[in-house]
Length: 325
Ligand SMILES: Nc1ncnc2c1ncn2[C@@H]1O[C@H](COP(=O)(O)OP(=O)(O)OP(=O)(O)O)[C@@H](O)[C@H]1O
Ligand SMILES: [Mg+2]
Image (cartoon, rainbow, N blue to C red):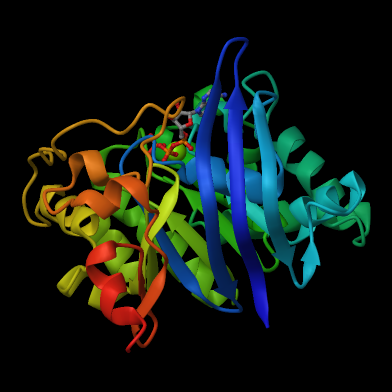
């Protein structure tokens, strides 16, 4: 059985005047022990998807339709308490915004104990401090006593990120959602931290969804990848296949625009802009930027077809032959 199964999720953001139609029928599965990558340009909806799973969207966000099955139970149909419990004990998230993750006015100790009070409510309170130390050691922080007595600003960026990871692990008994876990870190530390996350996930037997622009790291750390364009999953494939032989035109462009692994230059990005979510393009949302678009792409949304074993793509170039196999 899938640990997590998202089915046909639609999510909007509303402002006073407009509705932004962001997630467009997104489906995704994670089974036990699965390490899944989620990639796509900035603004494609990756964070929105992760936050929708945990129901922690900002107030403007609305889940319009779909299902979020967690161990078979639709989290969109159960009580708030049920979801809170999943968030505290079973699914941990490392947030993209590192400033929001730690409160500047409290010592690490207070914040960590507060998390453990909820995530490990079944443990004796007196165990929580040693649990915090154990988790901090697991993220390779030396001198855990000093870290616990520090305020966030007294730690380096890399140390803060390790604290954040340790806190996420406290709540991640089954699944870790890692949303750009190394943004704002020094390039030299980014690889270290990503590797650490990869090792911890394996050691603790966790499943993971990793969102990252570092495609080389996604390639190393995941066995399956979903590619998102403008709120739609356009391709899903085993990681190695996806990078060696991308099928969707968007995936090819995304991989080509990524900085080469050995180079320090930034990627050029893909020509054109992501769509205006107030008026998303009809048919395939990628059609205005696609060099291969034809009439049907403007009119009909391409179905998601399994083109070969475990390879899915939503593109009309692949859907014609799909019926006949
Ligand atoms: N609170 C909000 N109100 C209105 N629109 C929002 C809100 N939050 C996000 N959006 C819009 O939703 C779209 C998807 O945003 P999201 O943060 O999910 O993208 P992302 O793939 O995580 O991007 P990045 O790679 O930059 O983190 C963007 O166009 C963004 O502007
Ligand atoms: Mg994001």
